[in-house]
Image (tube, rainbow, N blue to C red; front, side, top):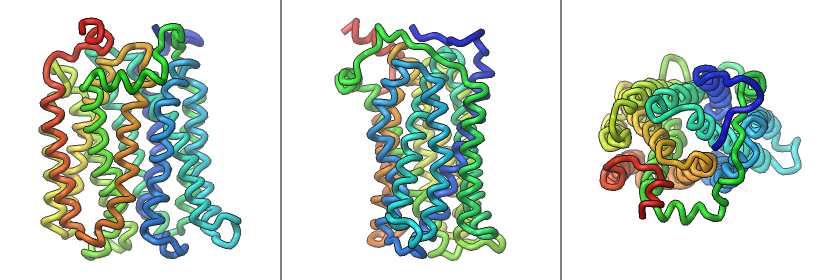
Length: 418
């Protein structure tokens, strides 16, 4: 079994507090990119398709790295890989600053932004998978939802902070200033991790091999169902909505005060992600009281779908604020309980790899989102695209109800029984 090493056990609260602070400040850097790049791209000569690739390439990078990174955590422990991940996240926005000068870099702006986003993807793979591994190790099924809620809530709050920083600072001080703030926030997160984060030392003799993962997923449909829900939630929210909301605001004349569509979209998305953070904490705690915490998936996915229906039907500032807030409630109410559910059923010494599998599905969704959404909105419009997102959310909710009902028997025990 894995264990905390390097001194006395710092306690669940201290571990969760350090992770929450780290993912909050790390999330700021991720949030800055979304309200800035869709409008910055044309100024630097990037087509919508290229901007979509820039926004998505970090997710494709994570997609490839999640499972191998999980193997790293299950083999060498958590502290050093996670600190390295936070550092990579902190350095990536400084690459964005270099990309603002097309003639000053050999690869051109698009190339520099792509490489910077790849670096961000590498760092976030270590941070996201490591967070799952550490939180699951230091919690139990009786309190896991509550602590997962706090960490995911901190991560969600970091992202809207980045959206606001990206929109408002870009409007007032310019794009370079916004990217520099994001980089400094990421480096601060690395410092927090280095000071506080404990290590979880694995028992490498009992961990499963990386090549066994596909068989493990095929053998237990619950892993596939949890992954499918994560894929769809990340596709419609982090993929479609975050990459199109600034264009939606421009087309429908949505303004917040004197801000342009860049600042307005950042403020609007901040409302959504604050709602997601609140739902994350509340639903995560509530899920600890349920015999099967996955039971919340269908109602929260229906809430998510309702938010997209509002966005499609009411393209005004009040409608956008309400729709994005409802979408945020659905996202925040869905992911943390399923994240904790996977921790409930995961073998103790394979948490890193199954955390990697969970993130593979999520990153596939959030990577495909911008690539599909930006070109498709030209063809079907915002109304058609958002209604399709609503239908997809309800469909995957029905899949979750069918697959995840019943007692959450751990994967290893179910395998033995069968």
